[in-house]
Length: 62
Length: 276
Image 1: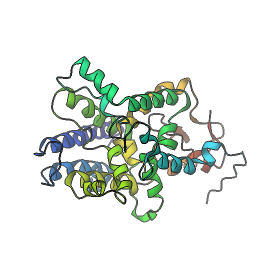
Image 2: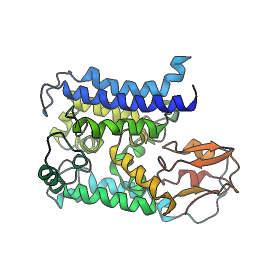
Image 3: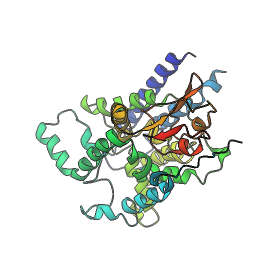
């Protein structure tokens, strides 16, 4: 993957991580008080997944 | 094995860096939290918040924005002091004074090397500013906000306070706390260098990096003397923010990622790296 594509993909993954975080918070039914419904967990975990995909994508692609 | 034969006297900031970080942790974090007591707070979530006032939410009036600045007055003073000193002296807040990043880096030192994840393959500035774009744009559009919910300045103090305070301990038994703890563990304690969270997700660090980059022509920074550099790559291997790349067989430091931790200066066998 050439350097420009790598950088653009990283920027997109950063954006995606942020959006995953925002939408995980938007799914929260408790407003500011967390009631551990795990409503955000699946989407919130996407933030972690995006970062790990960024890290391991070369191994995944291979 | 590379042997650093650097015989130059070590600067104060290099020699006592770990002690400075520990001092900052004592000043800011539980159980002592000395500095917060001056404003009647117990943590960063109040007058000392360095992030929330930066964000303009949809529907906020100018009066409302001004009130948020006044509410977080210590955070405003802190942030603009950080940006001003970074412009002239480099990112010493991030490398030496930030208790949040410093805690993750110190905790990282206790993790065995084989368990650490190397994030240096990610072009950090691009990921970081993609994330920062959402940090600012989402609240302005009324879509939502990353403030508070994914805040490292809220998570680390609670991690320290959990041993002393039930409310802080309870935070980590809730979903929000678990996700934040996961981010801190995977990007902090388990990251090579301990600074992946700082380098990828911290909005304060992202803005400070811009100040660092713009001011690099005017102020002191960690720089490489190309005449002395032999391209051994030792500096790149130890950089916690993967700010150093080899360009035409010489080390090149990206000032958008560099924090002057001086790990590269310490390891360089040719004394090619200096703070000037």
